[in-house]
Image 1 (tube, rainbow, N blue to C red):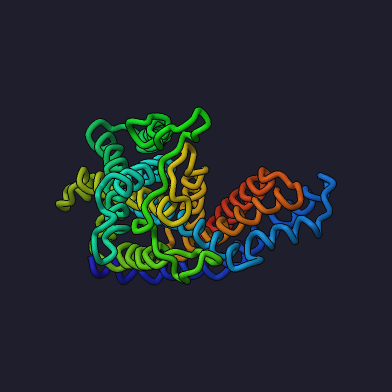
Image 2 (tube, helix red, strand yellow):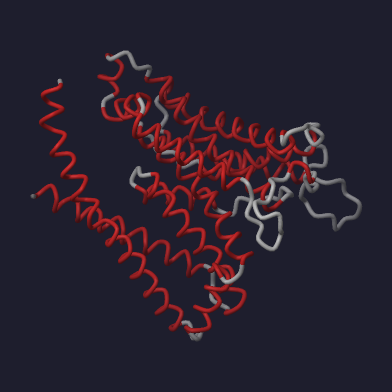
Length: 366
């Protein structure tokens, strides 16, 4: 076994380095190419390109508030992406980030409003909703894991369908006054929850709402480091890889396949639930139907593009976070449809995926 490792490791290392050297340039070229196509489409729409670019820059990083909003969005994408790469290590595809965000946000709101946590000391007032949301998202993901391990249900189908259920649960909860809808004073009362108590909101890192970057960012950085260590330097990471590569051999080696599948999907769901809590406790403060705004699906794309790399997740999350912020302002200030940003994201995805396949083929041929 040691002899095989010694003979295969240099080859694997060369392959990794051969892929890594041009990967950065390929990624940058893909992003730049997609941006150029986007500028061309803006020109075809009849919108002055310089106005659209100025509006995009202003919305993405043109002020302290814009930077904070972009980073906060990136945090959500990063958390979902981290959950995706964890599951991917065991050859599982978690596409349920949207539903896990929804469940996490709903539970965080319920605990913050009715869990009697606002008077807890030492920051527990905002920590308890975060933990409850993570647990709820984890259980939502673990349910798909049980279906996969016990009944053979494809996890893609299970996590996707569970997302639709979760979204409708949020809709029902904010439409029903006996659940989370605020008390109706008039017929014009909006179908949303009450605002969560001040003590349950995530503390601002700057202490100033002019730059509302919240403490969830620090938690996200810590979790990214933990995931990188788990995947790259622990026995658990090796076991997950074994389960993903050869479940039969892993079972013979004494690894619990059911426990691994359920556990890793629980972890992936917990990241999604935490992302939902960060959205509610860090920015929105009230639960509304559709509050997740497709963030779970963008986080899924971030995880796909990262190719199992935590730094890749962080880079992709930042890219998509700033793209979304800039696109929103570009629509408001320059009249450019936000759908154009989705087109640019699609171009980036297709270009990166195609370039990666070509690069891997060339390396294998060598």
